[in-house]
Image (cartoon, rainbow, N blue to C red; front, top):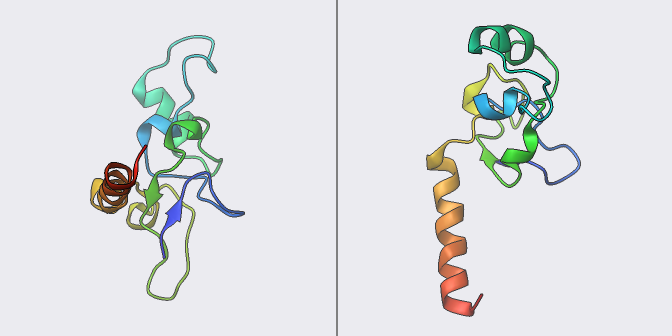
Length: 101
């Protein structure tokens, strides 16, 4: 089972994704370096502060025991990789082209 960011009661909050793991410049009053940001944001147990950029992305999902660990360091389960999202996007593109806008 895979999980889609932003949908359902318990969607992933700690996605292995640099852009969503760091706050946007609109949220942060001044620019920050990558090293500072990683220590302050990426390596915490807090939810991703910029998760809105990933709404609709599908992450790896549950393991062989049907358990999902919502943890940034567990990239196998929490990364929105292209090989996971491409089949969904391709299917939706086919449906849109075949049955209207």
